[in-house]
Amino acid sequence: MNDTETLGVVGGGQLGRMLAEAAAPLGIEVVVLDPTPDCPASPVARDQIVGDFDDEDGVRELASRADYLTFEIELADPDLLEAAASEFDVPVHPDPATLRTIQDKLVQKERLREAGVPVPEFRRVDDRADLEAAAAEFGYPLMLKAREGGYDGRGNVPVESEADLDALDELAGPAMAERFVDFEREVSVIGVKGETATATFPLGENFHREEILRETVVPARTDPAVADRAREVADDVLDLLSGRGAYGIELFETADGEILLNEIAPRPHNSGHYTIEGALCSQFEQHARAVTGRPLGSTELRSPIAMANLLGDGDERRPAEPAGEEAALAHPDASLHWYGKREVYPLRKMGHLTVAGDGDSDETDFDRLLDDARELRAEVTFE
Image (cartoon, rainbow, N blue to C red; front, side, top):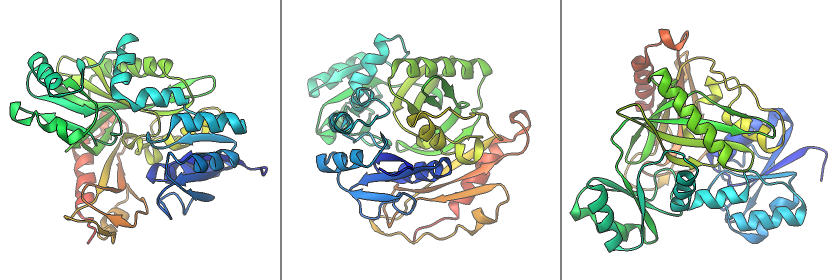
């Protein structure tokens, strides 16, 4: 092993790419394991091992070349990570036990409820009879979620009426049902668990369509008491989970100002991409610091900020040829990030942009900030 610290990452998508970009100034080199040759992280990582996320030989090779192990996708195999970390005496963070809990949404919710974290009502669904019982208890609409394999909105199916009960067949696996939350807004906290301390970024306000995150604005436009309560829930989550790193903590703010936990991602999260320009220390740098045992950085905002995802358009998979970014590049307060994906298909996350506000949040026109981000995004195509 050379003198430079090496972080081995299972996954080399856009999160791995931005993690490698943030790790480099800290003197940390990154090696990724990803099944896609020339994956998005490969241009900025030191090296890529081509292999599936659950490839035993690939995980062992990654561990043999790393001083620390982490993952940027929940499809990583916790058993393989644990075994490879033990064999090569390499710490892995977050803890594989945390990954096991997160990977099964039913287990995740049960653990949270047992710990007193507020969550929506839910129940296990193994067959149509279970789903019918959930509908009788919760009413319509309700949310049906695949217990495993779902992330970024995948595996989530709204059930609007009895006619939609066949949606269980779409998941082709064990599921859970949740009572639909009539929320005031969807919000999230990026929390960070370090070696000796924890930290949280300001509350973000999120906008989804078709279960895909479209925009985030920070700080969230809500009552300070609600933001404080969200931070308390995030702190409870960080106390509950084991292992260092950044965590995406998705929440609902109800109409009466209560906070309910939706889901947890044990990694940097899409709703935290704004931190690259918007915070003194980004979620990616925080993750690299935490996993390698370095002190955490500041989570203070530089300014209010809006983020918009750049999603694939069209009707089919095809080579990615982005165009129309000139408006974003010319905007004095905008920053553009491409993820380096070679192919585009509908709703695929191809990049994101941010627009920073002026002054403090009390002086910011958040509607204008969001409109600017949306208008700049509208200029981008992938023809």
